[in-house]
Length: 149
Image (cartoon, rainbow, N blue to C red):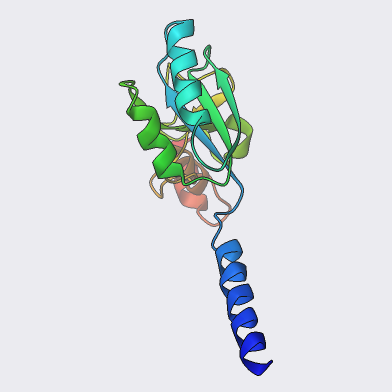
């Protein structure tokens, strides 16, 4: 019985490893230009057939696809591009999520209402005009404020 126990523990061990290597459940948002119902249906069907996909939501007005499941985001993007459509990861975030939404390069005319382009930095630069005005009229620098007035 010792050999049988050893073999059975080995089999259950490999089965447990296969379970743990499963990709985590995640949401992937992709921007895809879709003009008609046929484009929407083609992209939805291609993504739905992927292994690990739980749900696919398509919003043609925003040119957005949301995929939920145990999938690799790069593979989803590659699969969407295989339909011949121009696709990229969703580059927009809600405006209220950004600390400093007025930084240059944040606004995009094609962004949906209430969204801005995902910033690389959300804080103002050191030489921003607002910073210069604030430091100009400080209590520590009394003489500079008097020279302007």
